[in-house]
Amino acid sequence: MLATYLIGLREGLEATLVVSILIAFLVKSGRTDRLPQVWAGVAAAVALSIGFGALLSYTSTTLLRDYDQRELFEAITSILAVCFVTWMIFWMRRAARSISGELRGKLTDALALGSVAVAVMAFLAVVREGLETSLIFYSAVQGADLDGKPLYALTGGILTAVAIGCLMYATAVRINLTVFFTVTGVLLILVAAGILKYGVHDLQESGVLPGLNTLAYDMSAALDPSAWYTALLTGMFNVTPTASVVEAVTWIAYAVPVLVLFLRPARIAVPAPQH
Image 1 (cartoon, one colour):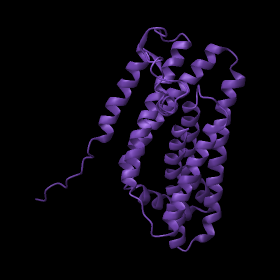
Image 2: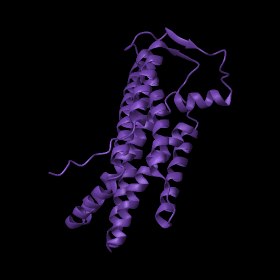
Image 3: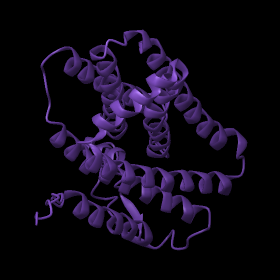
Image 4: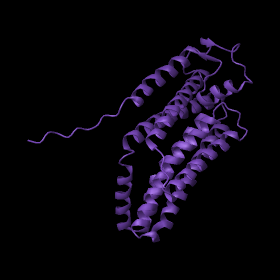
C-alpha cells in the first residue's frame, strides 16, 4: 500500500510538474489556443500507460499459462522496473534544475511546427512517466493480495501529486522539491531493492537461478504475519520473514551502493579560470 502510494506520488508529481511547466509557458506566451493540444497529448499518454499496464497483467494472467513462464516474465519485468527506477531517480537528481528550460525550448519549437507537434511534444513529455509508473506498479504488487488496495493507493498518490501541482501553480505556495525528491528517492531505492529481491526469487522459482531453499535467515518466529510492522516491511520494502542467500545478497548489493551514490553531494561545476 505505502509502496504503491509512494510510486504514484513520485511519478505523479514529476508528470504534474511537466504539464504545469507547459501550461504556464503557453499562458505567459499568450498561446492559450494551444492548450487543447497539450491536454490531448497528456490524455493520449495516460491512455497508453493504462493500456500498457493492462497488457502486462493480461500477459501474466492469461497469455502465459505455464507457471515457470509466468515466474520468468515477472522476474524480467521486475528487473526492468528496477532499471527504470534507478535511472529515473538519478536523472531527476541531475536534470531537476534544467528541465524547465529544456521543456520551454522544445515547446517553442513545437509551436513553430503546428498543433500536431504541440500534442506530440506533450505526449512524449508525459508518456515516459506513465509507462514507468505502469511497469513499476506491476512489479511492486507481484505476490501481493490483489484486492484492489494497491491500485487505490497508486491512484491516491497520483491524485495527491496532482493536488500539490495545482496548488503550486495556482498560488504562491512552494515546496522544497530538492528535499522532496531526495526523501522519495531514498524510499524508492529501498522499494526497488525489494522489487529486485522479488525478481531474483522469481528467477529461483522458475529454475533459472539455484539456491531457493538455501536460506540466509528465518525470522518467521519473530515476525507476526498479522502485525502492522510485518505488513509495512513486506509491502513497502519486500522484507519477508524468510529469504534465500541469493535474495539477501542481491538486496544488499543493490541498496547499499545505490544509496551511497544517490546521497553523496552533487558536484558543482567550477568555471575555468580566465587567461
